[in-house]
Image (cartoon, rainbow, N blue to C red; front, side, top):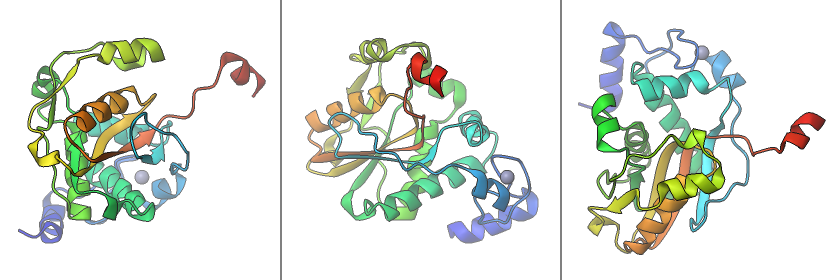
Length: 227
Ligand SMILES: [Zn+2]
């Protein structure tokens, strides 16, 4: 069934809700007007080691956080549609839509995926694939080792934490291709850099990275005290 018709039909039984405030919205809307106006769009110049480009839809802060929480919890069907749609628009606006051949989501360890029953980066990748008309390869790379939460670690420990955490699996479809690597939130870029290196060494021609949200640049304690 056509995606547009399916959403219109579902609207009768399960009205779409804004993934930030929970207000009922139109079947094809991503956010309510108020939340859409208040969210901070990403306009930074962050780069990921080894990647040809990096972009994000939103700056990660308290305003967009509810949508990310819903995306990870999987209790709101609209979070992947809203965040993925916004990221697809950003990729088009940045001229990247025509620079990629295939989309790869950042993998979760299988125990995390089993617990959650889905991979949120894969949901976003599928939304972008539909918007841009590009294929998604969800099993190109797997996470073989469960790692401590990156949030708890500093930059050096994050990088060490990820050593050999990922391994290539089905990389045939990526050979010679321009890959778009997708994650939900990018903090230091360690995960994306590790995956980029793996995809390039597995034969990808180039890797572009994109995340729904990018955390604000790190500020030293001194800078924070000054501001
Ligand atoms: Zn709202």
